[in-house]
Image (cartoon, rainbow, N blue to C red):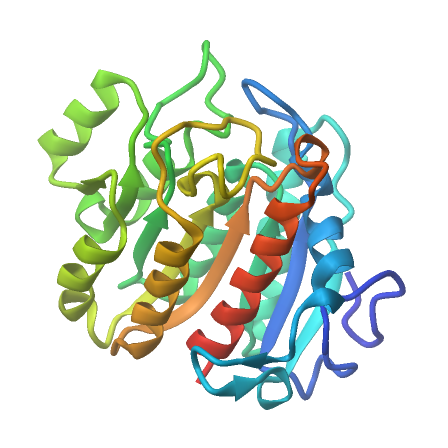
Amino acid sequence: MRFDETYSGNVFIKSHPSFEESKVVLYGMPMDWTVSYRPGSRFGPARIREVSPGLEEYSPYLDRELDEVKYFDAGDIPLPFGNPQKSIDMIEDFVDQVLAAGKIPFGMGGEHLVSWPVIRAMYKKYPDLAIIHMDAHTDLREHYEGEPLSHSTPIRKAANLIGPENVFSFGIRSGMKEEFDWAKEVGMYIAKFEVLEPLKEILPKLAGRPVYVTIDIDVLDPSCAPGTGTVDAGGITSRELLASIHEIARSEINVVGADLVEVAPIYDHSEQTANTASKLIREMLLGWVK
């Protein structure tokens, strides 16, 4: 993809016109080729952008305005429909270019498998990388019905790459018993059901480290975010997720990249999910980009 001109489609509210002058690159990964239940998350990035003008530009939580952070919306990576491996390769190459330019990548999905090639790219630049993962699901399977390229596998792949002791999962309330057993055996941190309070305990331990944050929108209860592929009852509120984003903002970790995935707008005619995702991205930009 070219970065020398503004994306011609809709852009996230207050996107800066210059790639060179921006600190953050916002981009979409419109892929849902491997989902095991309801497809449609490939339409998430576009809809998040489209609803973003409904946001206020000012965050009363952080007392900052979007004008204070220069970010460039590069649009969606043109992924080949139905080809997971080529899509993964294209995402990794794109993020390699963003990092080589000294920018911070903020991605929008798309199914959760899209985080895997981003993490591979991040790890090449940051060998002491840690991951904060917020999700309803463990995503620790080795394969789904024999297929290793699945949205149920990215965190297992990431843990095998950077070491399970460097992966911290929060809000988990669904997964195979084998996944929970594996995490316990290898020393991977999993906080069940909650995000904010366990996050407060972990953040001081990650002070000074480069951290990649991946948020699956289904960490929220379906009452807060029905527009996602695999809904799971018993999740956290949007208020807790916002508070968790702000807790990260107040911490001493170095957020070197992030993504928000699994928004599937077709299942939410109220557009509550897309609007919530848009606000979350605003807070991530204002809170995590110093």
